[in-house]
Length: 90
Image 1: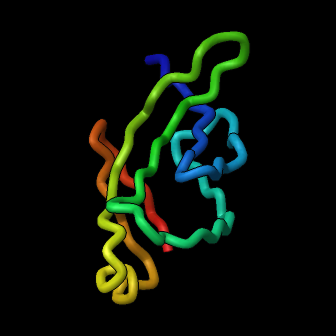
Image 2: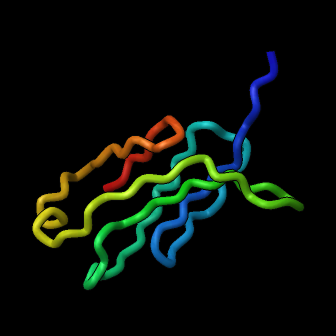
Image 3: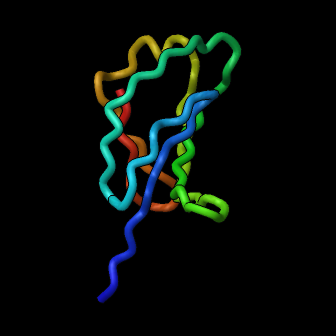
């Protein structure tokens, strides 16, 4: 059995995580801060970085950016991706 490995990265707003090569369970442990003044949602896009060709989309998820909901955001939030798997953010 051949198990394919991914080189995932996450893009959110104007930020992009570093690419972690050859893993199906990446841990970025990176912090980005931005103000959500007029956003309706925060969109997370997960990509598989490919050398020499277009990146492949692994999944995406959106959360509401309403100020009252963001103020009650838990320490750790697990977001289910639309293509399977999950993204944990805090």
